Image (cartoon, rainbow, N blue to C red; front, side):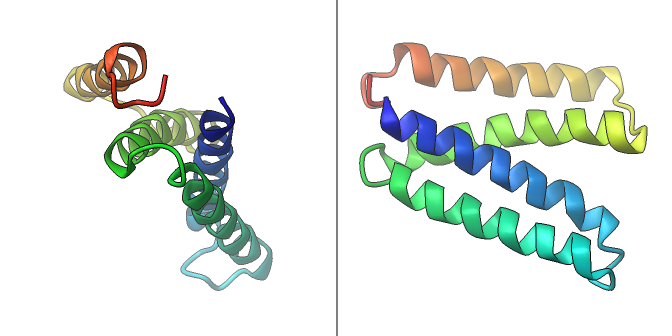
Amino acid sequence: MLPWLFLAVAIVAEVVGTSFLKASAGFTKPLPVMAVVVGYGLSFYFLSLTLETLPVGIAYAVWSGVGLLLITAVAWVAYGQTLDLPAVIGMGLILAGVLILKLFSTVAGH
């Protein structure tokens, strides 16, 4: 269970880092830049801990899929970005893929 906790921390840290990229205004604002660097640093550190147990393909699929869904939610709330129907359907398919990996894959570290 610990690798999945590490993966969750990695995902949240990556989402924090990515969400501050826009606020950094091309890396010209120091505080958002620090949030980007710390977020990505923590993300890659915890992802590396995850990879000690989980297969890289599974961990990366979950990391990128869940990260995409979370950063899209942040962009919607913080920046007022909207999605069209094909984008929503595509993200639903990504979520379905992540759930299938976690719930049914025998290589996903159950």
